[in-house]
Image (cartoon, rainbow, N blue to C red):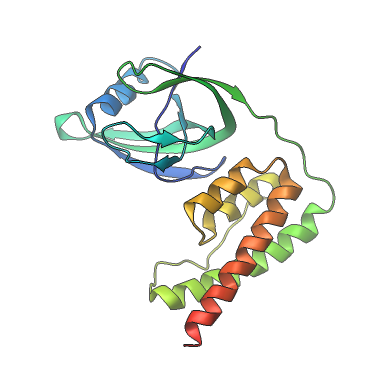
Length: 204
């Protein structure tokens, strides 16, 4: 069965939320249609182009999300909170009707072994330091150090991927990583690169 799709200029990870302001007519129709069907749609990263108007180039790995909350505004606009459920791979894009549709397959997730505890402790420490530096660089008080992670290792890793101050393309690399050990290793490298960059900027 075709899955409604909502390409974005951001990456959505499983177990993490994304707020959406839906104002384009085709996506207003999508949200309206999901009021009568199970509230699931897919999100993929736009690698080239814009969210508005079509003609974009899209990633082939994304996330199935579920509408958690929604509120209708004037002129048919919506405020929506969607939560990532599981990774998906696009098999075929279908003609827009009127919003994007695709045939997708779920990407199976492998459980993390007993080494996950050590990985998570190390990554959380590095992430906190990276966010501290990022807050100093950006002069922002909105960079939170109040990190509360899931007790489920795989979910905690997704949460840290979402919190890491890295580029969208690097976030997509984390989403595509085949399993938790590979994802943790990549996140560790990306955080180290970000820390080196932030430290260099602060030393100027």
